[in-house]
Structure formats: C-alpha cells, structure tokens
Image (cartoon, rainbow, N blue to C red; front, side):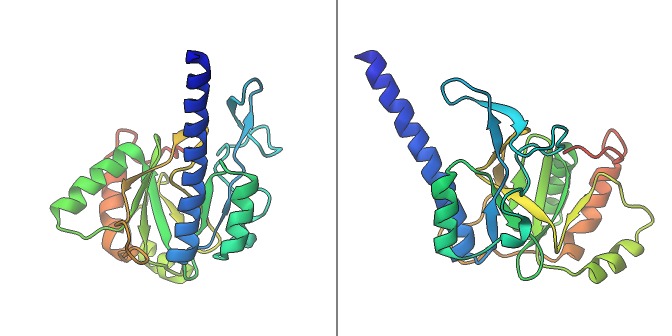
Length: 227
C-alpha cells in the first residue's frame, strides 16, 4: 500500500509541475502579451521517465542543452492561447522560450556571481528593476525593448564591454521560469508581481553601467562567457 500511495504522490507532483509550465506559458502569452514557444528540452535518459543532460536537438555538442528553440523555430513564437495550449499539451515539460525584442522585453545577461553583485549595487542606487531570471550560471535582467541602433550607440560610448555580457534583443531569446535545462532549474530572482499586467521594465541605459562594472570586477575580469 505504501508503494501505491507513493506512486500516486509522484504522479500528482508530475501533474502539478506540468500544469505549472502551461500556466506560466499562458500568463506570458495572454496576460503579458509576450511571444513564447517551447524550447528543445532535454532528451530522455531511458528508464522510468528519467531525463538526461543532453539536448533533444540533433547537435551532439549543443552549448545550451534544452534551452533554445528547435522545432518550431524562433519565428513561430506567438501570443495565441490555442497554440500555446497545443504546444504544452503535447510537450508539458518543454522549456518556455521568450522571443525577445520588437514589442517584447529585451534582456541583458551576465554570470551569476556578477549578476548578484550588480543587483546589490542597483538596489543601493535605488534603481527600480523589473523581473530578473536566474539559472545556476547566469542571471538575466529584463529590460524595455531596444533597437540594435540604440544598443550600438550605448556600447560605443563605453571604454570596454566584458565579453561575458550578453544582449538579448530582436531576433534573440531567453528561457523563462519554471523551465529546466541541462544547467539546472530556471527561476525568478526577482519575480513579476502576481496578478499584475505586463511587468514594468527599466530602460537598458539605466542598468548597463552597473552590469558592466559588476562583470569587470568579477574574478575572471568579465572575459569568460559562461552559459
């Protein structure tokens, strides 16, 4: 009897986790009007539904296992409720991928240690921040949409920009919570307010100086690009 009850508990946990993925994708797409699509996900390791660390895409040397678009491609990202329900109905544990840029949020990401340092400094400055996405290796600050021209002008005025900083603009993407990739669980370090409309986002100009400084003062000098 204990074994049967234990199995039922595991099944309830799995269903709850799957519902969380769909609910989060629907919130992004329908409440916030952020275009999303399912990520590649992780391939099965075989045996009782366990999952491995390899990407489900064909690239054996994939550098972001599970955490990128594959099929469908990035251009398929949508805010259509029916499409979102169909995608996650067929792949309930698929990562949630946000297509950045255009009318959707952009983001700036940096190594986790530098990200934590940057948030402390921005809080000290009294800077209002939007949502912050965290993985075990990288943190990403969501910012208002910007164009490549705006970004180019902003970075041109910097003496040096660490190579570990990544800019997720138009044509880019970002994996959102509560997704899972080979690097670990994706979570909110700063979560959007519950029940709110589309989350408020700062301009990239307001945060980039602190992110550059935090990356530069990181132990590796901001030169290491860690996914």
